[in-house]
Each structure stands twice: as structure tokens, then as C-alpha cells.
Length: 375
Picture 1 (cartoon, rainbow, N blue to C red):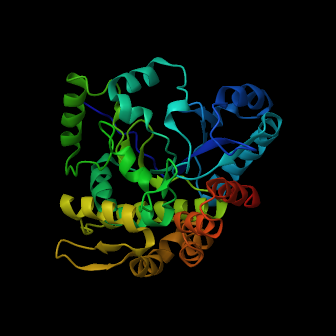
Picture 2 (cartoon, rainbow, N blue to C red):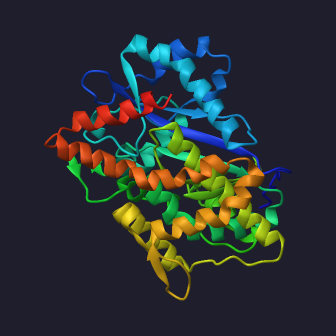
């Protein structure tokens, strides 16, 4: 099977931001995406930037092809601002986190469409449990020969992205003890989770052929890895991050992803071989970041060296500073340090729950307020 990769001559950016819809008073999820689309899209200058998702409690904002983080954030801000009047009319607020702290999956409704119906028909209970939201970042790569090496090298930094973005500690009214319950929920779907670490594009083609031939997938996009090639777009898509509540965090995570991918691609193009972790270390790092968030001690290399993820992030930001200067995102990359100082969303949500004696409505209020105040 031949899969053409339509390379990007520049390291372009595309961002996909999933948000949940919550009732303004009860703070529970509402299945109002269709009504929101009906009201918002006729008023939007670019309605194609507002997408439906598996469940009717979710919307996705997507950018056009962008060249800088600043451009991508302006794109998303414009789309968000244009749909807020429809939200006001419907009594809806937007909620940016990896999971909702108390909503029940049993009351959520599926978006109409054969693709979604088939997914639920196949995955059953696990598919219906997917009350999860994330952030996806596409970075353009020039040639297919470097796509899979960059992907494998990016897995070394998987826990850094997951720990920073972790925003799903509470599930169905219970604190799970995890910083990112979403990360472990999502990998239950077939073809989701960590990617295989192929070295040659032909191996990826053979894998895709097997998946299509045996009926595991019908189209390539149903390979739902946490990092995956998007051959038709000429990008590497990073899907590690939990849902995000503020524009400052959105910009910081996008900048870190952009800089990491570009840095690794440049190093590989120059003949360098960046460290690649064995799959068992990648898997352990994912679990550690999901469990402990910014307190995770991560494995750095095949020699089993370990380090607190926040300490490694500090050095990583220094190393990526020249790349950020080239890409025009110095300020956004530097703000990753502010995320650590302020605390990740999972930490802030737990702090609200503790202050309010476990009031989960107050937790939703706090996440909604963060998004509103970041506009």
C-alpha cells in the first residue's frame, strides 16, 4: 500500500481545540452542539472552523494553516469570539478540561452520522465512556523520510506535554488520584494510545494495509494514536494534551510542540540521531505523567537516567530558545515556565474542590471562569 506524504515546505501550524458545552446554572454537560451550530455558523465569517465531534456536548475549533503561534491563537480567538453570542442565547458556557468532574456518560447523546454510529457499535461501553476533550497540534514537515524518526524522538517528551496539560483528575464525582484520567481512558479505544515506533515509511504503509485489510479501520484517520502522521496535510499531529482552559496555556503548549518538532526535524536533517526511548520506557512515562502530573519523575534515556519532569522542562526551554526565536514564539515558549509556577489545571481543580468541601459545581465554575477571563 502506498501512502503519499504531502510535505510542507515550511514548519506550518494547525491547532484543533476541543471544548465541552455546560449549562450556565447546573454546570452539567448539555447536548446542544447542533443548536449552537445552527445559531452560530450563519453569523460566522468562516464557519468551517467550527466542527462537530462524537458527542453532542462537544465542539471543536480549528485553525487554518498558520505560520506562527501568534497567528494560530488569533485565529482561535476570532472563532471563539464569534460563537459566544450563540452561547449566550442558549444559556451555555464553554468548558476547557480533559474531563468533566461529575457528568454521567449515560445521558450523553451521539452526533448523527454513520462514522460515529459505527465507532460506538464496535467499542460499546468503552466508546460510550469517552467524555474526554483534548488539544491537537499539527506541525508541517518537509519530507516523509524524517516523519517517523521525528515521531519516535518526540515520544521522549510525551510526559512533559502530558504533565503540563493534565486537567482531568475527577471522573464521575470521584477524584481518581490521577492528574490525567483522560490519557488512560482514551487509550482503551482500538488503534488509540501510543504509536508504534517504526523506522521506515514502508513499515507504516504495511501496518496501515493490514489495518484496512482486516477491517480494523476504514480510513487512515481512524488510526487514533497520541502522535500520528497526517500524510494528506503534510504534518505530524500531536494529540497528547488534555483539554485546555486558557489562551495563555494554549499558546504555551502550542509553542512547545512547534519548537520540539522543528528542533528534532532540524537535528535529524543534519545527521544527528536524537535519543529514542525503548517502548517500555515510553509506556511507563505516559503512566507516570498521567498519575503524577508535574510531580512525575520521568525516564530520560535508554540508560535509565531519571529526573523530575519540571527540572527537565527548565533545561528543555533553554535548549529550545533559539528555535523559538526562529519561529517567532519566544514569549509563548517562555510562558511554559509560568504554567509550572501557577500550577497545572488538575492542581487548580483539586484546590477548588478542597476549598469548597468537594463542591464539583464550583470546580466547573472555576474552569469556565478561567476561559472567559483569558479572552
